[in-house]
Amino acid sequence: MSRPVRRRPRTATYAPASGVVHVTEQVEEFDAVIVGAGFAGMYMLHTLREHGFTARVFEVAGDVGGTWYWNRYPGARCDVESLEYSYSFSPELEQEWEWTERYAAQPEILRYAQHVADRFDLRRDIQFDTRVQSADFDDTVARWTIVTDDGTTTRSQFLVMAVGCLSSTNLPEFPGRDSFAGPSYHTGKWPHEGVDFTGRRVAVIGTGSSAVQSIPIIAQQAAHLTVFQRTPAYTVPAHNRPLTDAEISEVKADYQGLRAANRLMSGGFGARQERGEISALEVDDETRVAEYARRWDIGGFTFLGGFNDLLLHPDSNETAARFVRERIAETVHDPDTAALLTPTHVIGCKRLCIDTGYYETFNRPNVTLVDVSQQPIEQITPTGVRVGGVDHEVDAIVFATGFDAMTGSLLKINARGPHTTLQDAWEAGPRTYLGLAVHGLPNMFTISGPGSPSVLTNMITSIEQHVEWIRDCMIAMRDRGHQRIEATEAAQEGWVAYVNMVADMTLFPTCNSWYLGANVPGKSRVFMPLPGFPPYAEQCAAVAANGYEGFQLS
Ligand code: NA7
Image 1 (tube, rainbow, N blue to C red):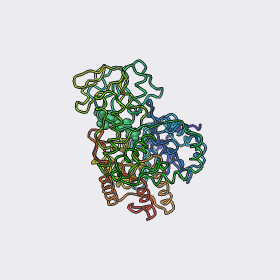
Image 2: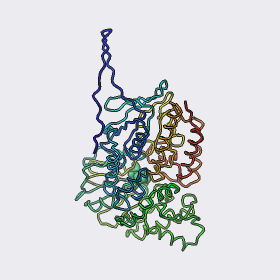
Image 3: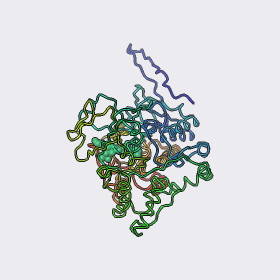
Image 4: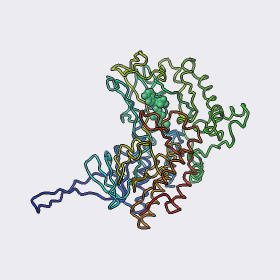
């Protein structure tokens, strides 16, 4: 394992002429500063170096991995299959890495990230345990000045935000939250040494994907588990299992073929399962239910792939939702608990969860479900959680309350362009061109930013497409002698209108999801990701082919 970057001691230059001593810090200069060493930052660094650019990565964590470094809660697992949730840029890497399970667990994904860092000797250009505090663009020289929390200053031509979409945790301000006397945890910032809940009374607040994955495991350990649910989740069985040698060999025999096929899928994954090309309303009930049952038995996101209009037409969507509601009624023994667990919103509107034994867990005698949809959590007390005047006494609290998704981490960095800050530019919600650039912040790129498919896709597919676009743009600028690139206001306005138009054609804006920012009080309600990877990638390619149309270059 190569050693990560350690700052050289600062050198001081003394200018004693007038008797006044000036101390100037040695400022390191790079072609690019990359913020974040998750899958986006790692590949950005690797490919820039390969093309002769210098780069420095700043990462707040102690190692690579991004979201997989922090999300170590019990049961944390990727909901995209492991053979597809991996880099495609290196055929050698693809062939040598062996995934063990259909859906990789967090420790295995983290080991993969660490392997990539070792294999491509990435750590020598990554400074860990370092937070970027501010970035200022000096328009006179077209350079960013980046200040980090170790008090040092770095300069670069380009600033690449590889901060991740799900990296800024959302910890609601429940009254009395900090008065709780026992330990509390957020799923997105789990202790590295793990937590043993054996014999303890545990509260889990939230029922999104992180809760759905962790609840069955916590319930097995805890003396008692109380789940506080505001909105019930739709969840589909993962049917996780060890991968067989035969299926690994089959994929590896034509890995690039699978990658190419995945890039033609709306979500950038899942090409091994065929997609239904007709409406759910074009077939009779029996055929439709048989198709849902077949896909339920396969497990995972393919459940929503049987018909082509499930996220477009409410009546079609309702047929899939009804199928899941019937499975809940069949699985959960207590009718009141089953009713509480039954969602009524559009299925897929909030990200579909993929589970192992979630609904079954509510049949356990040591699990209680508390509805907080009508009466919100009133108070966190030193000994538990109060709802509707009832105190639920617990020894530990797990906040599975999600993230300030897509914009949270970007806005924590005080990025300042010549005439605006990112905070001001996004006051009414995020506005980008292609999800890659922001008018007013020249030479800054966002990987999987709002306005790009990002979280509606296999993140690694989207990351690779963005990283390669940014790299090619930097190469083109170098070749043509350009120093500065900025999205025009007109191009950005057009893009924002386009993203809204596409989102409004779907059922996505119909519920209070984190895609809309609805989970964070006070956050602007804007549908942030753009549905549909293939047309998006085509548009990005066309922009580049047309001399970076919509950008001003100088
Ligand atoms: P999610 O999916 O945002 O889930 C957060 C959960 O926490 C969800 O059930 C929320 O209810 C609940 N929540 C949030 N704030 C509150 C308050 N104030 N009171 C009660 N309940 C609350 O985050 P996850 O970490 O589970 O998953 C994020 C993504 O990671 C996931 O989609 C996968 O892509 C991986 P709500 O639904 O808002 O009513």
